[in-house]
Structures are given as structure tokens and as C-alpha cells.
Image (tube, rainbow, N blue to C red):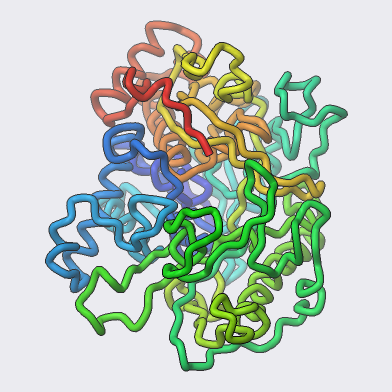
Length: 539
């Protein structure tokens, strides 16, 4: 068995993991980063989800490196894609012209930009990336984790990696379980957190948000790209949850804030019945807009399907046996194929001409797979550390704050970043429907990144000290990036200064020095400018 030594080990090469690596590498630390798929980038790439961002992202509310990522994506399209002159000159180019983000784009472009950002450190021997490696064991001594064992999915070979600091950037918080680090899963109770929207009874660890297996589509009218009938299509074509207004495979879905039935249009020229012409399923997460190019360059737009009908809530994938986890992962994939097959064959056409759109084509090449779906499940909720400080609904929710509509979120003296998104909980495995709550722009407290007991492990994605409720706004792309970058910077700072993360947080002079480093050296935003701080993120 091979053994390696490094200063910082980052287990998980997703959005937060890459940001953590960049922060540590840019101040001279040696890093090994592992990833279970063959694409780094997580939500942005392997899960194929375009960024969910707040409306002020072009002006503020993210770190300097996240801004560099966004600029790199736009630059990639300008340099390598045959854009029209108008698109080339647009300083705020939205490659997909989607509505979920000001920078909807293809996952392979994020991958290329992220690889470019890391390339100098790989060439210099400062960074080692181990793709298709998953953690299988951890060695601990007292309150420190000494090493993690990784298994190569291609060969079965195992490698033990020793490190001074270990960051958990896995999608499900896998290292927390392997190393016996105190953590939470599922939904807490009101008695535990005091949150108005927590469970009124006891906690339910198996009450977790729906998972989704995303995929990309284009549309070629007159052609036939119908896939084979999925094995579970009979089940999904008749399934209806108790809170859903019609069959799960249908054009109707409940609006999260009203739970009223709503009929979505699929294509950009179909006006949905709520009067918002810009909210159609096709446009929502469109990742390539053919209108940005000379006529005939692309035969179709490309959209990313991460729609309500894709949510799988029939069982959790965390805190269950491996067999049950695999069963629900398969179920999510079968739901994805069934949704596509339904749209191709049985969906009522919006023009009234019959059923099915056989010209919808699965674009596995766009997401880098032969099976057609994204490389990795989109997992909204991970294991969460029991932290020195836990962010709750009453810290950020407009109604839960109870201080008036202009109060703003709680102010955290130990802020290591900012974010903004509404509390957006998808239907859960306990068959609870959407929960969508207005929030104020918020800060990321350092206390939420520090485990109660363990000294040298830090969370670097959506596994921080949040709750089931607040995970709904601390899990989005720019916030996960900020969390990961803060964790990487903290580990590097502690190595350099001979400190522990707990000391940095709890001794005011040390905290001030670290925060100044985040601001000045890494370009962090630690508080919202006054004009944004009380502008609620509403539905």
C-alpha cells in the first residue's frame, strides 16, 4: 500500500474543494486533492448544475477568486466560441442566456477554467490531484485525524495520505463519518434549534432533501431521438406525491411559495400562465444559447434539466446502508430517464398537436458521460459538523428575525465571507413539500467551520455548522466556494503561524489578523455593503 505525506489534504474536488486548494496553494502550501469522479468542480461540472447566484453578484458578494472564475468562463467563450459581435462585446455575457444565473454555461467550460487556475501548481509539483479516488478509512489519535485511506476506483489500489490538516469537501460529508467526527444529518427539531420551520416533534435524521440526477438536452424537430423505455417507467408514469398537483411526470408543479398548481412552458416561445415570459423550463437553466452565434452555427440551444420533476424523494442516501444508498441512486437515475422518455413520447404537446417531442436529444457528450446523465448526483444536503457555532433560521430569515423588514441578518464578528440566497428546501424524503423563505444577505461565521472537538479537520463545502433549514441557502455555488476558500486559507494560516483554528476564532487579535489576511491577500468580502445588507432575497 502506498503512503503519501502533505501539508493539507482536501478530500473532495468539488466547488468548495477547488476553492480550498487555490487558497492554500496561493500562499505556498503543499496540497493533495482527491476527487471521486474524473472531473474536478462538483456542482459546476460533474453534477452539471449552472450557478445559483444572488442578483448582486456582478458588483459584490463573492471572493476575488470566484470573480476570477466567472471572468474566466466568459473569456473562454470569447476566445474559443464564434460569438456574434454583439455577444463578444457584451461585458456581462451570459453564455446560455438562462434565467437562473447571469452566467449559465456548459460544465466542460467550468472544468477547463478550473483546470487552468490549478495548472501552475500542478506543474510546479505543489499540487497533486488524485481523480477517481474515494475515501474508505481514516486514522485518528485523540482529537486529531492523522491520515485518510483512499481507494482508486480504476484499480482498487489504496493509498494512505498523512497530512497536518484535512479538509472534508466531499458531497455527502463522508470524512465526518469515517473519522468519527460529531455531525448531524437530516432535519432537526424546534426544540434543538428554535427555528420556526424546524420539525415540531423530534428530529428525523432520514428526513433529507430530494436528490436529482441532472442531464443536458437539445431539440431537433423532425428527428427521432427517443431513448429505450426505462425499466421503471411504469412506476414513474403513474406516481403522484400527496403534495403534488398532478402526476409527477407532468407539466404541472407547485409554486414553492404558494403551493398552487402551475403549468410550465418547456420552450422559450411559450408563455407560462403566470405571465412571466422569462420563466420557461427550457430557458431556466439553458447552458448554450444558439442566438449568441451566427445563424446555423448550432442546430439548437442546449438546456440543463434540473427541474422540479427531476427531484427524487423516495429515500435518503445518507445514514443508510450501502445497498439502500445504491437503490435510491438507481431510483434517481430511473426517474431522470423516465422524465426524458415521457417528454419524448407521452407529454401533451403545448401546441395541441398530440403527444411527445421525439426531437429532444440526450446530450451525454456535454456532461462527459456515455450513459447520458451527469457524472455525479446533485446532492443538496450533506452531513453537517457539530460546530462551535450553528447558523439557524433566526439568524438570516426575514420572518424569523422578527425585527422588522429592514433589520438585516445577524452580524457575525468572526465573519469569513458572505452569501445570499433564499432558504430553498426541495421536497424531502419524509414527503414534506417545498419550503421557500425570504432571507437577508448573510455572513459566513468562522465558528460554523470549526468542529466542536476535532482540531485539524475543517468542512469545505455544504457540511458546515448549518441546519437542515439554513442548508437551503448555504449550499449554493458562490457560498460553497467561499466556505471552501476560507477553510483552505485557515488551514494554511494555522500551519504558517503554528496555531489551531479554534485559537484563531476565539482570540480576538488572532481573528483580526486572519480576517485582514482574507481581505487584503485573498480579496474576501466579509460584510455586505450597507445598500445591500437589508435587501431581502425574496422569492
